[in-house]
Amino acid sequence: MDRPHPVAGPSGAAETEDARLLRELQQKVQRYELIFAATNDVVYELNLETAKVAWNDSLYTQYGYKPSKQVTTLEWWTGHVHPDDAFLLENKITDLFESKTSSWQCEYRFRRADGGYNYVHDRGLLLRDNDGNPLKIIGSLLNMTAQKQLDIAKDEFIALVSHQLRTPLTVIRVYGEMLTGGTFGNLNSEQAQWVRNMTNSSARLIEIVGDILNVSRLDLGRINISAKPHNISELLAGCLRDVQLLADQKGVKLRLEMTKDLPAVPVDEAIFVQIVHNLLTNAIRYTKPGKGLVVVKFGVQKEGYVLSVQDNGIGIPKEAQAHVFDRFYRAKNALLLEAQGSGLGLYLIKVMCDAFGGRAWFTSTPGKGTTFFVQIPKRGMTLR
Image (cartoon, rainbow, N blue to C red; front, side, top):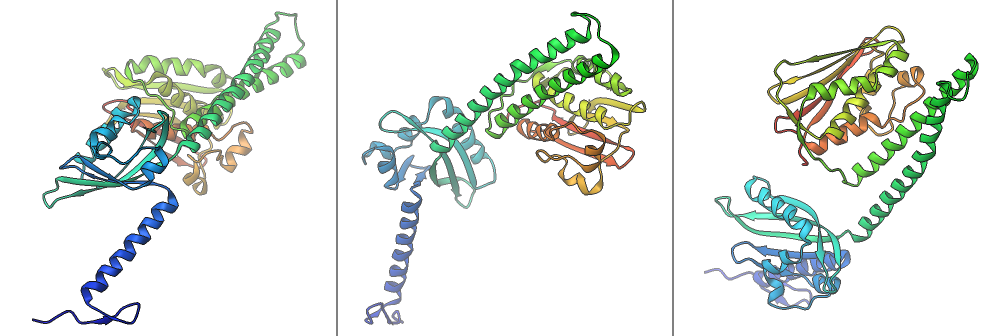
């Protein structure tokens, strides 16, 4: 029987192949330990057969716990997840087991020894046996507390500023409408036009403030979806009434086409109305005055419910089509026709569709018009 061939070790002395492999393995382990120590991540290995957890030292140095048998149980771990996040974590793990994927991630709050909570980003890999049965999860907990606190402060600041801006802007708009309505006496044609410009600008500013607040909430993942069965015909008719004045000012005709005998569709009314409003105002603004036609359709297809808003406006240049859903983006021909606009409306639609499991897309011919589509899953709007 051949023996392992001796090789020279670090000190010059001969060492066997087994000893060399063991030394290299120890060096790799030391490197990984140094990496984990440098990142300060809590690293764990969860054995799903025994429900036992092995932690690295970061659990004890970061969270103030002392090593014990109790800490190494799955029950202890789940018992230290914030009650409001426990259901989310359970669903994420269940989805992982039932899927064919091996990686997963989840954000939740994990309790420290002093009773406070850290926001953590849990990233893990699921190991399976040859039959595909889950064996263990190896992962790490990244402390996101400082970033979350910054996000919360940012959200609160934007909400405060938005509220403080909306109040005086609303007052300006109301008084402007009262002036043009003759409440304080008659205005000549020139005065009435200037007041209308002021009123329209204040209304536009209120809309922009609302868009900025919505973008902030979406960026922070603070979107709530509460879907209930709704009569879509009634919702769409209401949306068209809301933009009728803008359409009249532009000389644009509005038309609604609905599939017959459509059942009630589970949608979040606020989100659905926001999407339709953004699509309608875009379509009206980017049609030529006096010749515009906007057609709204809603029906059922194999993949789900589909809303479409079609216009015969300026269309979207080919070089701009890849950027239409980007934040703050506006095509050059749109800027020439309509100076107003924040470039947030379509971005908001895309993010909201992503949130409830739908999708948004469009077809466009420059100079002839654009049709935007929004697909809602057959199950309705649900938070992904």
